Image (cartoon, rainbow, N blue to C red; front, top):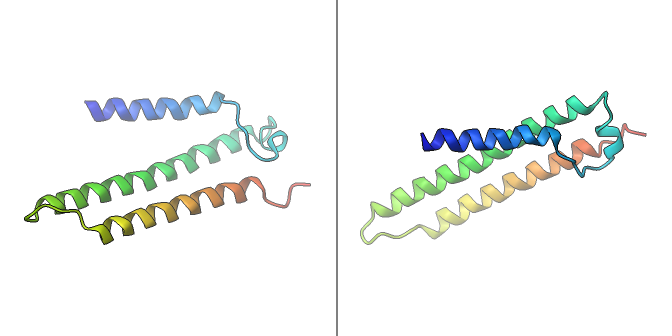
Length: 109
């Protein structure tokens, strides 16, 4: 039940994003009435990709903690945690760059 309430909270935050005042490049173009729904659907799908990246990171941390607790003495593998952190940060960089590229594409005059 706890997980369901967290998911409902996150979905509620995503729903509120439809009514938020966004600070995006070329805001007058992207938030024009004819493009507003396209922009919001892109932001929603992009947010879901971020959620997937974060979920993979949390699952990886959980796996490493379970692995560390099975060792005697219990210790967390530094190379594994740094590799996981590096992958997470690389995913975030790709996510941010793709959002900036989408909102700054050059076909807009």
